[in-house]
Image (cartoon, rainbow, N blue to C red; front, side, top):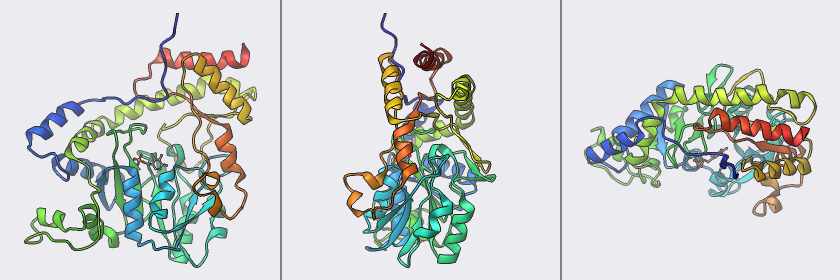
Length: 379
Ligand SMILES: *Cc1c(COP(=O)(O)O)cnc(C)c1O
Protein backbone atom coordinates (compact mmCIF):
# COMPACT_ATOMS: atom_id res chain seq x y z
CA UNK A 1 0.00 0.00 0.00
CA UNK A 2 1.30 3.44 -0.92
CA UNK A 3 2.10 5.59 2.07
CA UNK A 4 0.82 9.12 2.45
CA UNK A 5 3.49 11.58 1.38
CA UNK A 6 5.07 13.62 4.17
CA UNK A 7 6.03 16.97 2.69
CA UNK A 8 8.97 19.01 3.91
CA UNK A 9 6.74 21.97 4.70
CA UNK A 10 3.03 22.75 4.58
CA UNK A 11 1.34 26.16 4.87
CA UNK A 12 -1.32 26.19 7.54
CA UNK A 13 -4.13 28.04 9.30
CA UNK A 14 -3.58 28.44 13.03
CA UNK A 15 -6.67 30.37 14.07
CA UNK A 16 -8.76 33.21 12.77
CA UNK A 17 -6.88 34.09 9.57
CA UNK A 18 -9.91 33.62 7.27
CA UNK A 19 -12.21 35.52 9.59
CA UNK A 20 -9.79 38.47 9.60
CA UNK A 21 -9.53 38.42 5.80
CA UNK A 22 -13.33 38.71 5.66
CA UNK A 23 -13.14 41.53 8.18
CA UNK A 24 -10.62 43.34 5.97
CA UNK A 25 -13.14 43.14 3.14
CA UNK A 26 -15.91 44.37 5.41
CA UNK A 27 -13.67 47.26 6.49
CA UNK A 28 -13.66 48.34 2.84
CA UNK A 29 -9.88 48.61 2.75
CA UNK A 30 -7.69 46.10 0.98
CA UNK A 31 -4.67 48.27 0.19
CA UNK A 32 -1.87 48.63 2.71
CA UNK A 33 -1.35 50.35 6.07
CA UNK A 34 -4.86 49.70 7.39
CA UNK A 35 -6.13 48.19 10.63
CA UNK A 36 -4.43 44.77 10.34
CA UNK A 37 -1.12 46.28 9.25
CA UNK A 38 -1.19 48.59 12.26
CA UNK A 39 -2.14 45.77 14.63
CA UNK A 40 0.62 43.48 13.37
CA UNK A 41 3.26 46.20 13.44
CA UNK A 42 2.34 47.33 16.95
CA UNK A 43 2.40 43.74 18.22
CA UNK A 44 5.81 42.89 16.75
CA UNK A 45 7.28 46.22 17.77
CA UNK A 46 6.32 45.81 21.39
CA UNK A 47 7.01 42.07 21.62
CA UNK A 48 10.59 42.42 20.36
CA UNK A 49 11.36 45.93 21.55
CA UNK A 50 11.84 47.30 18.03
CA UNK A 51 12.11 51.07 17.70
CA UNK A 52 9.97 51.06 14.52
CA UNK A 53 8.42 48.29 12.49
CA UNK A 54 7.02 48.29 8.94
CA UNK A 55 5.30 45.32 7.34
CA UNK A 56 6.69 44.58 3.89
CA UNK A 57 5.68 42.43 0.95
CA UNK A 58 8.54 40.03 1.74
CA UNK A 59 11.72 39.60 3.72
CA UNK A 60 13.49 40.36 0.45
CA UNK A 61 11.70 43.73 0.24
CA UNK A 62 12.72 44.52 3.82
CA UNK A 63 16.37 43.82 2.93
CA UNK A 64 16.05 46.01 -0.17
CA UNK A 65 14.70 48.83 1.97
CA UNK A 66 17.66 48.39 4.31
CA UNK A 67 20.09 48.77 1.40
CA UNK A 68 18.29 51.94 0.27
CA UNK A 69 18.21 53.40 3.78
CA UNK A 70 21.91 52.84 4.30
CA UNK A 71 22.49 54.56 0.97
CA UNK A 72 24.54 51.77 -0.59
CA UNK A 73 26.35 53.08 -3.69
CA UNK A 74 28.10 51.27 -6.56
CA UNK A 75 31.47 50.04 -5.33
CA UNK A 76 30.50 49.82 -1.67
CA UNK A 77 31.25 46.53 0.04
CA UNK A 78 28.87 44.53 2.19
CA UNK A 79 29.95 41.52 4.21
CA UNK A 80 27.54 38.57 4.21
CA UNK A 81 27.86 34.84 4.82
CA UNK A 82 28.21 32.67 1.73
CA UNK A 83 25.83 30.10 3.20
CA UNK A 84 22.57 32.05 2.80
CA UNK A 85 19.64 32.74 0.52
CA UNK A 86 20.13 34.91 -2.57
CA UNK A 87 18.05 37.77 -1.13
CA UNK A 88 20.68 38.55 1.51
CA UNK A 89 23.08 39.39 -1.32
CA UNK A 90 20.67 40.63 -4.00
CA UNK A 91 19.31 43.47 -1.92
CA UNK A 92 22.78 45.05 -1.89
CA UNK A 93 23.95 43.90 -5.33
CA UNK A 94 20.87 45.66 -6.78
CA UNK A 95 22.33 48.94 -5.47
CA UNK A 96 25.72 48.21 -7.05
CA UNK A 97 27.45 46.82 -3.97
CA UNK A 98 30.12 44.18 -4.08
CA UNK A 99 29.32 41.43 -1.60
CA UNK A 100 32.25 40.02 0.33
CA UNK A 101 31.60 36.52 1.57
CA UNK A 102 32.44 35.23 5.04
CA UNK A 103 32.68 31.56 5.96
CA UNK A 104 30.44 29.67 8.36
CA UNK A 105 31.48 28.57 11.83
CA UNK A 106 33.05 25.11 12.05
CA UNK A 107 30.18 23.88 14.24
CA UNK A 108 27.25 25.92 12.91
CA UNK A 109 26.13 27.30 9.51
CA UNK A 110 26.13 30.88 10.89
CA UNK A 111 28.75 33.44 9.88
CA UNK A 112 32.02 33.10 11.78
CA UNK A 113 31.91 36.55 13.37
CA UNK A 114 35.43 36.22 14.79
CA UNK A 115 36.79 36.34 11.21
CA UNK A 116 34.80 39.31 9.94
CA UNK A 117 37.42 41.91 10.93
CA UNK A 118 39.77 40.49 8.25
CA UNK A 119 37.19 41.28 5.55
CA UNK A 120 36.76 44.98 6.35
CA UNK A 121 38.23 47.54 3.95
CA UNK A 122 37.82 51.31 3.51
CA UNK A 123 34.84 50.55 1.21
CA UNK A 124 32.92 48.37 3.67
CA UNK A 125 29.55 49.89 4.55
CA UNK A 126 27.58 47.10 6.21
CA UNK A 127 27.67 43.63 7.73
CA UNK A 128 24.65 41.37 7.30
CA UNK A 129 24.60 38.48 9.77
CA UNK A 130 22.04 35.77 8.94
CA UNK A 131 20.54 33.97 11.94
CA UNK A 132 20.37 30.54 10.33
CA UNK A 133 17.62 28.25 11.63
CA UNK A 134 16.67 31.02 14.07
CA UNK A 135 19.99 30.60 15.89
CA UNK A 136 21.63 33.90 16.77
CA UNK A 137 24.94 34.96 15.27
CA UNK A 138 27.50 36.18 17.78
CA UNK A 139 26.47 39.82 17.67
CA UNK A 140 28.87 41.36 20.22
CA UNK A 141 32.00 41.29 18.00
CA UNK A 142 29.98 42.61 15.05
CA UNK A 143 28.57 45.52 17.04
CA UNK A 144 32.07 46.41 18.15
CA UNK A 145 33.37 46.34 14.57
CA UNK A 146 30.41 48.43 13.44
CA UNK A 147 31.19 51.08 16.01
CA UNK A 148 34.92 51.11 15.31
CA UNK A 149 34.56 51.33 11.50
CA UNK A 150 31.27 53.24 11.34
CA UNK A 151 29.36 50.41 9.65
CA UNK A 152 25.71 49.41 9.70
CA UNK A 153 24.54 46.06 10.97
CA UNK A 154 21.55 44.66 9.08
CA UNK A 155 20.26 41.51 10.70
CA UNK A 156 18.83 39.00 8.25
CA UNK A 157 16.34 37.72 10.80
CA UNK A 158 14.15 36.15 8.10
CA UNK A 159 14.21 32.92 10.14
CA UNK A 160 14.67 34.60 13.50
CA UNK A 161 11.22 35.33 14.94
CA UNK A 162 11.01 34.63 18.71
CA UNK A 163 14.75 33.92 18.96
CA UNK A 164 17.26 35.77 21.10
CA UNK A 165 20.94 36.58 21.51
CA UNK A 166 21.94 36.75 25.19
CA UNK A 167 18.30 37.42 26.02
CA UNK A 168 17.87 40.17 23.44
CA UNK A 169 15.28 39.43 20.72
CA UNK A 170 16.74 38.91 17.25
CA UNK A 171 15.80 41.78 14.97
CA UNK A 172 16.18 44.31 17.78
CA UNK A 173 19.99 44.33 17.81
CA UNK A 174 21.19 45.66 14.44
CA UNK A 175 20.58 49.16 13.07
CA UNK A 176 18.07 47.49 10.77
CA UNK A 177 16.63 44.00 10.53
CA UNK A 178 14.49 41.96 8.15
CA UNK A 179 11.96 39.28 9.13
CA UNK A 180 10.11 37.01 6.70
CA UNK A 181 6.61 35.54 6.78
CA UNK A 182 7.12 33.40 3.68
CA UNK A 183 5.10 30.18 3.86
CA UNK A 184 8.23 28.23 4.81
CA UNK A 185 8.89 30.24 7.99
CA UNK A 186 7.42 29.73 11.48
CA UNK A 187 4.83 32.50 11.16
CA UNK A 188 3.41 32.88 7.66
CA UNK A 189 1.32 35.09 5.42
CA UNK A 190 2.16 33.42 2.09
CA UNK A 191 4.65 36.10 1.17
CA UNK A 192 5.41 38.86 3.66
CA UNK A 193 8.03 40.44 5.85
CA UNK A 194 8.89 43.14 8.31
CA UNK A 195 11.54 45.82 8.41
CA UNK A 196 12.70 46.64 11.93
CA UNK A 197 14.20 50.13 12.19
CA UNK A 198 16.18 50.25 15.41
CA UNK A 199 18.38 53.23 14.57
CA UNK A 200 15.97 56.19 14.88
CA UNK A 201 17.88 58.21 12.26
CA UNK A 202 16.36 55.94 9.59
CA UNK A 203 12.76 56.01 10.86
CA UNK A 204 11.24 58.93 8.95
CA UNK A 205 12.82 57.99 5.64
CA UNK A 206 11.88 54.31 5.99
CA UNK A 207 8.20 55.24 5.97
CA UNK A 208 8.67 57.35 2.84
CA UNK A 209 10.54 54.66 0.86
CA UNK A 210 7.79 52.26 1.94
CA UNK A 211 5.02 54.46 0.48
CA UNK A 212 6.40 55.03 -3.04
CA UNK A 213 8.52 58.01 -2.04
CA UNK A 214 5.59 59.95 -0.60
CA UNK A 215 4.78 61.22 2.87
CA UNK A 216 1.37 59.51 2.78
CA UNK A 217 1.84 57.75 6.12
CA UNK A 218 2.42 61.12 7.80
CA UNK A 219 -0.61 62.50 5.92
CA UNK A 220 -2.79 59.66 7.29
CA UNK A 221 -1.74 60.63 10.79
CA UNK A 222 -2.71 64.24 10.06
CA UNK A 223 0.86 65.48 10.35
CA UNK A 224 0.93 67.11 6.90
CA UNK A 225 -1.89 68.80 4.98
CA UNK A 226 -1.40 66.84 1.75
CA UNK A 227 0.89 64.14 0.60
CA UNK A 228 3.59 64.66 -1.97
CA UNK A 229 6.50 63.02 -3.71
CA UNK A 230 9.41 63.73 -1.38
CA UNK A 231 12.06 61.04 -2.06
CA UNK A 232 12.72 57.84 -4.02
CA UNK A 233 10.71 54.82 -2.97
CA UNK A 234 8.69 51.84 -4.08
CA UNK A 235 5.64 49.86 -3.06
CA UNK A 236 6.95 47.85 -0.14
CA UNK A 237 3.77 47.62 1.92
CA UNK A 238 1.58 44.53 1.77
CA UNK A 239 -2.17 44.46 1.18
CA UNK A 240 -4.51 44.30 4.17
CA UNK A 241 -5.45 40.77 3.01
CA UNK A 242 -1.90 39.67 3.79
CA UNK A 243 -1.78 41.62 7.03
CA UNK A 244 -5.11 40.08 8.10
CA UNK A 245 -3.73 36.58 7.57
CA UNK A 246 -0.60 37.53 9.46
CA UNK A 247 -2.58 38.98 12.37
CA UNK A 248 -4.45 35.66 12.65
CA UNK A 249 -1.09 33.88 12.93
CA UNK A 250 0.43 36.33 15.37
CA UNK A 251 -2.43 35.81 17.76
CA UNK A 252 -1.52 32.11 17.86
CA UNK A 253 2.22 32.74 18.04
CA UNK A 254 2.72 30.95 21.33
CA UNK A 255 0.74 27.83 20.46
CA UNK A 256 2.50 27.62 17.08
CA UNK A 257 5.89 27.86 18.76
CA UNK A 258 4.96 25.33 21.44
CA UNK A 259 4.08 22.81 18.77
CA UNK A 260 7.25 23.41 16.77
CA UNK A 261 9.39 23.00 19.90
CA UNK A 262 7.70 19.69 20.71
CA UNK A 263 8.48 18.45 17.19
CA UNK A 264 12.05 19.76 17.26
CA UNK A 265 12.67 18.21 20.67
CA UNK A 266 11.15 14.93 19.52
CA UNK A 267 13.65 14.69 16.66
CA UNK A 268 16.49 15.64 18.98
CA UNK A 269 15.58 12.98 21.55
CA UNK A 270 14.70 10.12 19.23
CA UNK A 271 17.69 10.61 16.92
CA UNK A 272 20.34 11.08 19.60
CA UNK A 273 21.14 7.35 19.68
CA UNK A 274 22.13 7.41 15.99
CA UNK A 275 24.08 10.60 16.53
CA UNK A 276 25.98 8.99 19.40
CA UNK A 277 26.72 6.03 17.14
CA UNK A 278 28.37 8.46 14.72
CA UNK A 279 25.82 8.24 11.88
CA UNK A 280 25.41 12.03 11.75
CA UNK A 281 25.60 15.12 13.94
CA UNK A 282 22.59 16.90 15.42
CA UNK A 283 22.29 20.72 15.45
CA UNK A 284 24.58 22.38 17.96
CA UNK A 285 23.52 25.56 19.70
CA UNK A 286 25.90 28.23 20.98
CA UNK A 287 25.33 29.15 24.64
CA UNK A 288 24.40 32.73 23.70
CA UNK A 289 21.52 31.66 21.43
CA UNK A 290 17.89 30.89 22.25
CA UNK A 291 16.49 29.35 19.08
CA UNK A 292 12.94 29.08 17.70
CA UNK A 293 12.63 25.53 16.35
CA UNK A 294 12.67 26.83 12.79
CA UNK A 295 14.73 24.04 11.21
CA UNK A 296 15.76 20.60 12.35
CA UNK A 297 18.73 19.30 10.40
CA UNK A 298 21.16 16.42 10.38
CA UNK A 299 24.80 16.81 9.38
CA UNK A 300 25.78 13.71 7.48
CA UNK A 301 29.45 12.71 7.17
CA UNK A 302 29.53 13.34 3.40
CA UNK A 303 27.59 14.57 0.39
CA UNK A 304 27.25 11.00 -0.89
CA UNK A 305 25.73 9.76 2.33
CA UNK A 306 23.44 12.79 2.67
CA UNK A 307 22.08 12.22 -0.83
CA UNK A 308 21.67 8.48 -0.24
CA UNK A 309 19.68 9.16 2.93
CA UNK A 310 17.51 11.77 1.18
CA UNK A 311 16.79 9.35 -1.67
CA UNK A 312 15.99 6.55 0.77
CA UNK A 313 13.49 8.80 2.56
CA UNK A 314 12.04 10.02 -0.71
CA UNK A 315 11.31 6.42 -1.77
CA UNK A 316 9.29 6.22 1.46
CA UNK A 317 7.37 9.36 0.50
CA UNK A 318 9.27 11.52 3.00
CA UNK A 319 10.67 14.79 1.75
CA UNK A 320 13.92 15.81 3.45
CA UNK A 321 15.92 18.52 1.74
CA UNK A 322 19.36 20.11 1.61
CA UNK A 323 19.72 23.88 1.85
CA UNK A 324 21.79 26.62 0.20
CA UNK A 325 24.38 26.41 -2.51
CA UNK A 326 27.11 28.71 -1.14
CA UNK A 327 26.73 32.01 -2.99
CA UNK A 328 30.47 32.31 -3.68
CA UNK A 329 30.13 29.23 -5.92
CA UNK A 330 26.92 30.39 -7.68
CA UNK A 331 26.82 30.89 -11.46
CA UNK A 332 25.91 34.55 -10.94
CA UNK A 333 28.60 35.55 -8.45
CA UNK A 334 31.47 33.07 -8.48
CA UNK A 335 33.55 35.17 -10.88
CA UNK A 336 33.32 38.12 -8.48
CA UNK A 337 34.51 36.14 -5.48
CA UNK A 338 38.18 36.70 -4.78
CA UNK A 339 39.04 33.03 -4.51
CA UNK A 340 39.30 32.76 -0.72
CA UNK A 341 38.30 29.20 0.20
CA UNK A 342 35.20 28.97 2.43
CA UNK A 343 35.35 25.33 3.46
CA UNK A 344 32.69 25.40 6.15
CA UNK A 345 30.05 26.96 3.87
CA UNK A 346 30.78 24.18 1.36
CA UNK A 347 30.56 21.53 4.06
CA UNK A 348 27.06 22.70 5.13
CA UNK A 349 25.91 22.71 1.52
CA UNK A 350 27.09 19.12 1.16
CA UNK A 351 26.24 17.60 4.52
CA UNK A 352 23.10 19.30 5.79
CA UNK A 353 19.70 17.61 5.50
CA UNK A 354 16.54 19.27 6.79
CA UNK A 355 13.74 17.05 8.10
CA UNK A 356 9.99 17.73 7.74
CA UNK A 357 8.89 20.22 10.40
CA UNK A 358 5.60 22.09 10.15
CA UNK A 359 2.60 23.01 12.27
CA UNK A 360 0.40 20.13 11.08
CA UNK A 361 3.05 17.40 11.25
CA UNK A 362 1.37 14.83 13.51
CA UNK A 363 3.05 12.43 15.91
CA UNK A 364 2.52 9.38 13.66
CA UNK A 365 4.06 11.06 10.65
CA UNK A 366 7.01 12.27 12.65
CA UNK A 367 7.48 8.77 14.01
CA UNK A 368 7.50 7.48 10.44
CA UNK A 369 10.31 9.92 9.58
CA UNK A 370 12.36 8.80 12.58
CA UNK A 371 11.76 5.10 11.88
CA UNK A 372 12.77 5.51 8.24
CA UNK A 373 16.05 7.12 9.34
CA UNK A 374 16.66 4.24 11.76
CA UNK A 375 15.97 1.67 9.08
CA UNK A 376 18.39 3.43 6.69
CA UNK A 377 21.21 2.99 9.22
CA UNK A 378 20.17 -0.22 10.92
CA UNK A 379 18.27 -2.02 8.16
C1 LIG B 1 13.33 33.42 3.66
C2 LIG B 1 14.61 34.14 3.69
C3 LIG B 1 14.80 35.37 3.03
C4 LIG B 1 13.78 35.96 2.12
O1 LIG B 1 12.53 36.19 2.68
P1 LIG B 1 11.28 36.28 1.70
O2 LIG B 1 10.18 36.69 2.59
O3 LIG B 1 11.09 34.91 1.10
O4 LIG B 1 11.59 37.30 0.67
C5 LIG B 1 16.00 36.03 3.18
N1 LIG B 1 17.00 35.52 3.93
C6 LIG B 1 16.86 34.33 4.55
C7 LIG B 1 17.99 33.83 5.38
C8 LIG B 1 15.68 33.60 4.45
O5 LIG B 1 15.57 32.42 5.07
